[in-house]
Image (cartoon, rainbow, N blue to C red):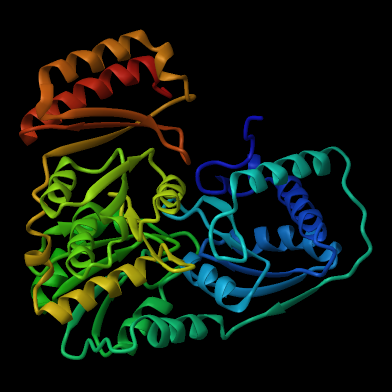
Length: 451
């Protein structure tokens, strides 16, 4: 059965349109209400949202169905996705909801759902929601069980306390200066407070959300713009989060951007040295730079590659019992027993803990991950035509791959959240890589361009 509503990261669309039209969101709420009612008891649901203007209205629409089925909704207000996941797991909620479109523009929004363990719902559960949603759109259920909705203004403080007491009880960042970009998103208040709680001096950017400026010129896609602040302040680290703060990009003390490949290399080396890297296995995706794969070989660590998406990474980690995984884009996943962390702030704190413990800078820690030049271009498309049905593009790809030989690779894939084709070329030198990527992107535009 094909998935009509769920993409790679929940249900996402332009707010108020398509999959997020009011009638669909209300039907989704009723579908969730029915799903939770299968357990026979009133369910406790935790909700949070990012700073988009549309978030509160979408949550109100979703809540109608939940309350109609007699469930209790705890509204944490503006919260990062990881904060919602953590609180849901630690406090025994039956379901968690985040209204966010992560790194997408402000006009978009999305619905993300997590289970009692704080992890994304299994495919089978999402498929069940889709079935119920279709039924609700065709014939809305009528239920007279009044649920309850409460606000929870202390949720953010409990999340910060968890980080301090359960995760980093001995971390002291006194004397360290950090530059932090919160993307005008969900972390705009919680992240600066959390880092200051550990004693750091924090210089901020992207902490004035107005409902429309989330991710606009700030955040993970603009981490290079932290350079001036890092340089002038003598900061030991620049930290850039995305709109819902599950992803992070770092800048070292010299102004060099360190992405997920660098971070995974540092974490893998630290865990392997401490004999805490179970199975000596790291999980990443096909987007991982060849430099990370080479670094893993040097460490005697197996680098398992999956399709793009944190869902695939987490599934492989579970299967292989790995404690570390992530993506080049900055979504790093840690597993500690039954606890899973896919949290940009937590990841930054883990890096700061290693820096404090070893006395090394991020630049020194990341240096062994010698990355191959890589160019990633986005081609806007009218629709996601299967690539096998595009012979001209296939021929162009084959020609580029032949010219690269064993010294590089090509990856073409569609975005799971936007109408984009990702064109990635990796090779021995930047000029060659950029030219080949431009060449493929040009062919792709002719075949697929949205006009």
